[in-house]
Amino acid sequence: MPAPPAVPAAGLAWGALGVAAFSLTVPLTRVAVGGLSPLLIGAGRAVVAALLAAAALGLARAARPVGRQWTRLAVVAGGVVVGFPLLTTYALTTVPASHGAVVIALLPAATAVVAVLRTGESPTPRFWAFSAAGAVAAVGFATAGGTGGGLHVADLLLLGAVLAAAVGYAEGGLLSRELGSWQTVSWALLVAAPLMVVLTAVAVVRRPPEGSPAEWAAFGYLAAVSMFLGFFAWYRGLAFGPMAQVSQVQLVQPVLSLLWAALLLGEAVGWRTGLGAVAVIACAAGAVRSPLRST
Image 1 (tube, rainbow, N blue to C red):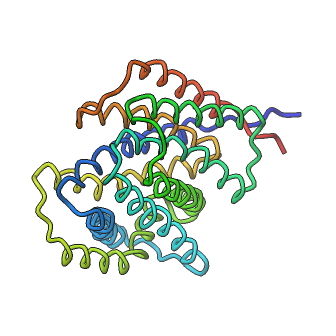
Image 2: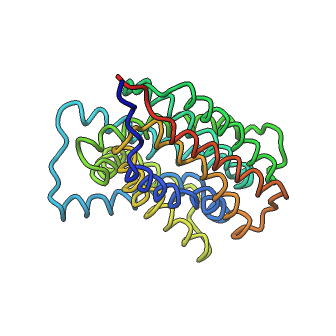
Protein backbone atom coordinates (compact mmCIF):
# COMPACT_ATOMS: atom_id res chain seq x y z
CA MET A 1 0.00 0.00 0.00
CA PRO A 2 1.56 3.36 -1.01
CA ALA A 3 2.28 5.85 1.73
CA PRO A 4 -0.11 8.82 1.99
CA PRO A 5 1.26 11.96 0.34
CA ALA A 6 2.92 14.57 2.53
CA VAL A 7 1.58 18.07 2.85
CA PRO A 8 3.01 20.22 0.01
CA ALA A 9 5.71 22.57 1.26
CA ALA A 10 4.21 25.36 -0.82
CA GLY A 11 0.92 25.07 1.04
CA LEU A 12 2.66 25.36 4.41
CA ALA A 13 4.80 28.29 3.24
CA TRP A 14 1.84 30.28 1.92
CA GLY A 15 -0.17 29.40 5.02
CA ALA A 16 2.65 30.59 7.28
CA LEU A 17 2.84 33.89 5.38
CA GLY A 18 -0.89 34.39 5.87
CA VAL A 19 -0.57 33.63 9.59
CA ALA A 20 2.23 36.18 9.92
CA ALA A 21 -0.04 38.80 8.33
CA PHE A 22 -3.00 37.87 10.54
CA SER A 23 -0.97 37.78 13.76
CA LEU A 24 -1.23 41.57 14.07
CA THR A 25 -5.01 41.62 13.65
CA VAL A 26 -6.00 41.20 17.30
CA PRO A 27 -3.42 43.63 18.78
CA LEU A 28 -4.11 46.30 16.15
CA THR A 29 -7.87 45.93 16.57
CA ARG A 30 -7.29 46.62 20.26
CA VAL A 31 -5.34 49.75 19.27
CA ALA A 32 -8.06 50.95 16.91
CA VAL A 33 -10.94 50.55 19.39
CA GLY A 34 -9.27 53.11 21.61
CA GLY A 35 -10.66 55.94 19.51
CA LEU A 36 -12.78 54.45 16.71
CA SER A 37 -16.14 52.79 17.16
CA PRO A 38 -16.30 48.98 16.93
CA LEU A 39 -18.85 49.15 14.12
CA LEU A 40 -16.66 51.50 12.08
CA ILE A 41 -13.63 49.25 12.53
CA GLY A 42 -15.49 46.03 11.74
CA ALA A 43 -17.43 47.35 8.75
CA GLY A 44 -15.26 50.21 7.52
CA ARG A 45 -12.19 48.08 6.99
CA ALA A 46 -14.24 45.80 4.72
CA VAL A 47 -15.35 48.82 2.67
CA VAL A 48 -11.76 49.96 2.17
CA ALA A 49 -10.72 46.40 1.29
CA ALA A 50 -13.61 46.14 -1.18
CA LEU A 51 -12.33 49.23 -2.99
CA LEU A 52 -8.91 47.61 -3.28
CA ALA A 53 -10.56 44.39 -4.45
CA ALA A 54 -12.59 46.17 -7.12
CA ALA A 55 -9.44 47.84 -8.45
CA ALA A 56 -7.53 44.55 -8.52
CA LEU A 57 -10.34 42.68 -10.27
CA GLY A 58 -10.75 45.46 -12.79
CA LEU A 59 -7.06 45.74 -13.61
CA ALA A 60 -6.74 41.95 -13.97
CA ARG A 61 -10.01 41.68 -15.90
CA ALA A 62 -10.80 38.70 -13.75
CA ALA A 63 -13.51 36.32 -14.89
CA ARG A 64 -16.78 36.59 -13.01
CA PRO A 65 -17.93 33.73 -10.78
CA VAL A 66 -20.80 31.67 -12.14
CA GLY A 67 -23.76 29.75 -10.76
CA ARG A 68 -23.34 28.34 -7.26
CA GLN A 69 -20.01 30.09 -6.88
CA TRP A 70 -21.92 33.25 -5.93
CA THR A 71 -23.72 31.42 -3.15
CA ARG A 72 -20.45 29.99 -1.90
CA LEU A 73 -18.87 33.45 -2.02
CA ALA A 74 -21.72 34.68 0.17
CA VAL A 75 -20.77 31.99 2.70
CA VAL A 76 -17.14 33.16 2.62
CA ALA A 77 -18.22 36.77 2.98
CA GLY A 78 -20.50 35.97 5.90
CA GLY A 79 -17.67 34.22 7.70
CA VAL A 80 -14.54 36.29 7.14
CA VAL A 81 -15.80 39.68 5.91
CA VAL A 82 -18.81 40.17 8.19
CA GLY A 83 -18.80 37.66 11.05
CA PHE A 84 -15.21 37.43 12.26
CA PRO A 85 -14.28 41.15 12.04
CA LEU A 86 -17.44 42.46 13.69
CA LEU A 87 -17.59 39.87 16.46
CA THR A 88 -13.93 40.15 17.41
CA THR A 89 -13.99 43.94 17.30
CA TYR A 90 -16.90 44.16 19.73
CA ALA A 91 -15.28 41.54 21.97
CA LEU A 92 -12.03 43.49 22.08
CA THR A 93 -13.75 46.56 23.49
CA THR A 94 -13.99 44.72 26.84
CA VAL A 95 -11.09 42.24 26.89
CA PRO A 96 -7.37 42.73 26.21
CA ALA A 97 -5.69 41.58 23.01
CA SER A 98 -3.97 38.77 24.88
CA HIS A 99 -7.37 37.35 25.82
CA GLY A 100 -8.53 37.74 22.22
CA ALA A 101 -5.67 35.45 21.19
CA VAL A 102 -7.82 32.60 22.57
CA VAL A 103 -9.91 33.00 19.42
CA ILE A 104 -6.92 32.19 17.27
CA ALA A 105 -6.00 29.32 19.56
CA LEU A 106 -9.29 27.55 18.84
CA LEU A 107 -9.57 28.46 15.17
CA PRO A 108 -7.22 25.84 13.65
CA ALA A 109 -9.10 22.96 15.27
CA ALA A 110 -12.44 24.43 14.19
CA THR A 111 -11.17 24.94 10.63
CA ALA A 112 -9.92 21.35 10.51
CA VAL A 113 -13.32 20.00 11.56
CA VAL A 114 -15.17 22.13 8.98
CA ALA A 115 -12.65 21.19 6.26
CA VAL A 116 -13.11 17.49 6.95
CA LEU A 117 -16.91 17.83 6.86
CA ARG A 118 -16.80 19.96 3.71
CA THR A 119 -14.13 18.15 1.68
CA GLY A 120 -14.17 14.58 2.92
CA GLU A 121 -10.45 14.70 3.79
CA SER A 122 -9.54 11.84 6.09
CA PRO A 123 -6.87 12.75 8.67
CA THR A 124 -5.38 10.03 10.82
CA PRO A 125 -5.99 9.67 14.58
CA ARG A 126 -2.46 11.03 15.04
CA PHE A 127 -3.52 14.26 13.32
CA TRP A 128 -6.54 14.68 15.58
CA ALA A 129 -4.42 13.96 18.65
CA PHE A 130 -1.88 16.64 17.74
CA SER A 131 -4.67 19.08 16.78
CA ALA A 132 -6.47 18.60 20.08
CA ALA A 133 -3.22 18.90 22.01
CA GLY A 134 -2.35 22.02 20.05
CA ALA A 135 -5.71 23.65 20.80
CA VAL A 136 -5.34 22.88 24.51
CA ALA A 137 -1.74 24.11 24.53
CA ALA A 138 -2.62 27.29 22.63
CA VAL A 139 -5.54 28.13 24.92
CA GLY A 140 -3.38 27.42 27.95
CA PHE A 141 -0.60 29.54 26.51
CA ALA A 142 -2.96 32.45 25.84
CA THR A 143 -4.62 32.35 29.25
CA ALA A 144 -1.33 31.92 31.10
CA GLY A 145 0.24 34.75 29.15
CA GLY A 146 -1.54 37.52 30.97
CA THR A 147 -5.24 37.32 30.09
CA GLY A 148 -6.36 37.23 33.68
CA GLY A 149 -8.01 33.84 33.24
CA GLY A 150 -11.66 32.98 33.56
CA LEU A 151 -14.55 33.41 31.16
CA HIS A 152 -15.82 36.78 30.00
CA VAL A 153 -19.11 37.83 28.42
CA ALA A 154 -17.08 38.61 25.30
CA ASP A 155 -16.16 34.92 25.03
CA LEU A 156 -19.54 34.24 23.38
CA LEU A 157 -18.64 36.77 20.69
CA LEU A 158 -15.22 35.20 20.33
CA LEU A 159 -16.71 31.72 19.96
CA GLY A 160 -19.07 33.00 17.27
CA ALA A 161 -16.09 34.56 15.51
CA VAL A 162 -14.23 31.24 15.55
CA LEU A 163 -17.15 29.38 13.99
CA ALA A 164 -17.69 32.08 11.36
CA ALA A 165 -14.04 32.17 10.35
CA ALA A 166 -13.74 28.37 10.24
CA VAL A 167 -16.59 28.14 7.75
CA GLY A 168 -15.23 31.05 5.72
CA TYR A 169 -11.74 29.59 5.64
CA ALA A 170 -12.84 26.13 4.51
CA GLU A 171 -15.21 27.37 1.81
CA GLY A 172 -12.74 30.00 0.68
CA GLY A 173 -9.98 27.41 0.40
CA LEU A 174 -12.17 25.29 -1.86
CA LEU A 175 -13.21 28.25 -4.01
CA SER A 176 -9.58 29.30 -4.37
CA ARG A 177 -8.97 26.11 -6.31
CA GLU A 178 -11.55 27.31 -8.85
CA LEU A 179 -11.28 31.10 -8.84
CA GLY A 180 -7.78 31.72 -7.47
CA SER A 181 -6.82 32.91 -3.98
CA TRP A 182 -6.88 36.69 -4.41
CA GLN A 183 -9.90 36.49 -6.70
CA THR A 184 -11.86 34.59 -4.05
CA VAL A 185 -11.33 37.13 -1.29
CA SER A 186 -11.86 39.99 -3.73
CA TRP A 187 -15.23 38.71 -4.92
CA ALA A 188 -16.26 37.91 -1.35
CA LEU A 189 -15.50 41.50 -0.35
CA LEU A 190 -17.64 42.81 -3.19
CA VAL A 191 -20.51 40.49 -2.26
CA ALA A 192 -20.48 41.90 1.28
CA ALA A 193 -19.83 45.51 0.22
CA PRO A 194 -23.45 46.80 0.13
CA LEU A 195 -24.11 45.67 3.70
CA MET A 196 -20.77 46.94 4.96
CA VAL A 197 -21.26 50.35 3.31
CA VAL A 198 -24.60 50.73 5.12
CA LEU A 199 -23.08 49.66 8.45
CA THR A 200 -20.16 52.05 7.96
CA ALA A 201 -22.53 54.93 7.28
CA VAL A 202 -24.50 54.08 10.42
CA ALA A 203 -21.26 53.99 12.42
CA VAL A 204 -20.16 57.42 11.17
CA VAL A 205 -23.54 59.01 11.91
CA ARG A 206 -23.73 57.52 15.40
CA ARG A 207 -20.17 58.40 16.33
CA PRO A 208 -18.12 60.62 14.04
CA PRO A 209 -14.60 59.18 13.93
CA GLU A 210 -11.93 61.04 15.88
CA GLY A 211 -9.06 58.60 15.91
CA SER A 212 -5.43 59.41 16.57
CA PRO A 213 -2.77 58.80 13.90
CA ALA A 214 -1.87 55.50 15.57
CA GLU A 215 -5.50 54.39 15.60
CA TRP A 216 -5.98 55.26 11.94
CA ALA A 217 -2.73 53.47 11.08
CA ALA A 218 -4.02 50.37 12.86
CA PHE A 219 -7.29 50.69 10.92
CA GLY A 220 -5.32 50.94 7.68
CA TYR A 221 -3.47 47.70 8.41
CA LEU A 222 -6.71 45.92 9.28
CA ALA A 223 -8.25 47.05 5.99
CA ALA A 224 -5.35 46.50 3.61
CA VAL A 225 -3.64 43.47 5.15
CA SER A 226 -5.93 41.66 7.59
CA MET A 227 -8.97 42.06 5.35
CA PHE A 228 -7.32 41.78 1.93
CA LEU A 229 -3.65 41.01 1.31
CA GLY A 230 -3.30 38.42 4.08
CA PHE A 231 -5.98 36.30 2.44
CA PHE A 232 -3.95 36.13 -0.78
CA ALA A 233 -1.43 33.95 1.01
CA TRP A 234 -3.83 32.17 3.38
CA TYR A 235 -6.29 30.99 0.74
CA ARG A 236 -3.45 30.02 -1.57
CA GLY A 237 -2.04 27.84 1.19
CA LEU A 238 -5.42 26.25 1.89
CA ALA A 239 -5.93 25.69 -1.83
CA PHE A 240 -2.72 23.67 -2.00
CA GLY A 241 -4.10 21.64 0.91
CA PRO A 242 -4.87 19.35 2.47
CA MET A 243 -6.83 22.05 4.28
CA ALA A 244 -7.07 20.18 7.57
CA GLN A 245 -3.29 20.03 7.83
CA VAL A 246 -2.46 23.48 6.45
CA SER A 247 -4.94 25.07 8.87
CA GLN A 248 -2.83 23.84 11.79
CA VAL A 249 -0.09 26.31 10.87
CA GLN A 250 -2.37 28.87 12.49
CA LEU A 251 -1.63 27.33 15.89
CA VAL A 252 1.44 29.55 16.04
CA GLN A 253 -0.68 32.68 15.63
CA PRO A 254 -1.49 33.04 19.36
CA VAL A 255 2.23 32.99 20.07
CA LEU A 256 2.83 35.82 17.61
CA SER A 257 -0.26 37.75 18.70
CA LEU A 258 0.73 37.71 22.36
CA LEU A 259 4.24 38.83 21.50
CA TRP A 260 2.82 41.70 19.43
CA ALA A 261 0.48 42.58 22.30
CA ALA A 262 3.45 42.76 24.65
CA LEU A 263 5.58 44.82 22.25
CA LEU A 264 2.92 47.21 20.96
CA LEU A 265 0.49 47.45 23.87
CA GLY A 266 2.67 46.71 26.84
CA GLU A 267 0.40 43.86 27.94
CA ALA A 268 2.01 41.51 30.44
CA VAL A 269 3.19 38.14 29.17
CA GLY A 270 4.06 35.61 31.85
CA TRP A 271 7.22 33.56 32.24
CA ARG A 272 5.43 30.56 30.70
CA THR A 273 5.59 32.22 27.29
CA GLY A 274 8.67 30.34 26.11
CA LEU A 275 7.46 26.95 27.28
CA GLY A 276 3.98 27.53 25.89
CA ALA A 277 5.34 28.66 22.54
CA VAL A 278 7.47 25.52 22.21
CA ALA A 279 4.47 23.30 23.04
CA VAL A 280 2.18 25.04 20.56
CA ILE A 281 4.70 24.96 17.73
CA ALA A 282 5.54 21.30 18.42
CA CYS A 283 1.87 20.34 18.22
CA ALA A 284 1.43 22.31 14.99
CA ALA A 285 4.45 20.54 13.49
CA GLY A 286 3.11 17.16 14.55
CA ALA A 287 -0.30 17.90 13.00
CA VAL A 288 1.01 19.06 9.63
CA ARG A 289 3.37 16.07 9.45
CA SER A 290 0.47 13.66 9.98
CA PRO A 291 -0.59 12.64 6.44
CA LEU A 292 -4.09 11.81 5.32
CA ARG A 293 -5.20 8.20 5.18
CA SER A 294 -4.42 6.68 1.81
CA THR A 295 -7.46 5.85 -0.32
